[in-house]
Amino acid sequence: MSPESVTGVAALPGGTRLVCADTSLWKLGAGKPVRFTLPESCQGLRVSPSGQLALVAGAKAASVWHLGDGKMLTQIQWSDPARRAAFLGDAALLLAGANGLERLDLGTQARTSLRPGAATGAVTGVVAAPDGQRAVVGDGTRVQLVNLADGQVLSGVRCEAACPVQDAQFGAGRRVAVVRAGDTLYALREGHPATVVLRGAQGSAGFPLADGGTWVLTAGRIERRDAQTGRREGVVRPEGVSGPAAWTPQGGLLFVSGRELVELDAAGREVGRTALP
Image (cartoon, rainbow, N blue to C red):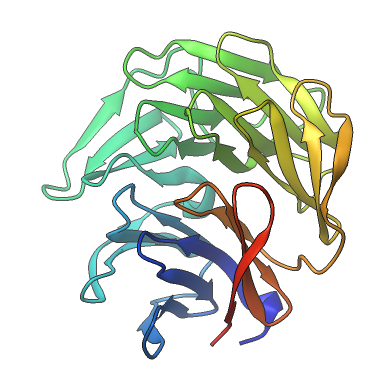
């Protein structure tokens, strides 16, 4: 596996790690790596809150996998699923489309329209918080943090240029999200206006910290920036970051560096490495 082919990683409770690349989803643990063969090339990976299910996005469809037995539970034909499909708890998906947001029950396949609040019309990107109570939604011209129960907009921004939602990461309290929309990283904090963390952020990702800082993966390194002002406060890792990243259950970070997965703890110290299969 080449590092450039990795399009998604995830850290599960108990030390298991997932790597999505080409038409393979790899499950890495204490034993031999386990490979799930995907119906099409992986363009995105998300994991349910319990860590038992994986949502793998392809070009035109999303598939849901049970990580215990490696069986595909369902496949949903959906436009741009890497940006328009997310877990809503462990029993449903949140789908974004021309008519707003829908809840798809994984057991019955029933669909229910959700109140879109201010995000009326087409929704082109969505990322739900792990607790399923809030989500980041975008329509290509604005990005909002919304309460899914009543549609209330908790924070948001109307962009100066086209800003499709590319990535969003929630902090531990689920009330702050850092979003890459277009070429800008925005911090959306509940009850506050959106702020710019980084401009010229193509390919970057931001991970909000409990103390108001943000880990920003950009240009092959990890920086620490202030979520409110965007000011760079330091460099956590000066080089060697070459692929996607994800939170660990302990509040650290998992990312690709060369031909390995590298894990940092919540203080930014390296605590482990795993070879890519």
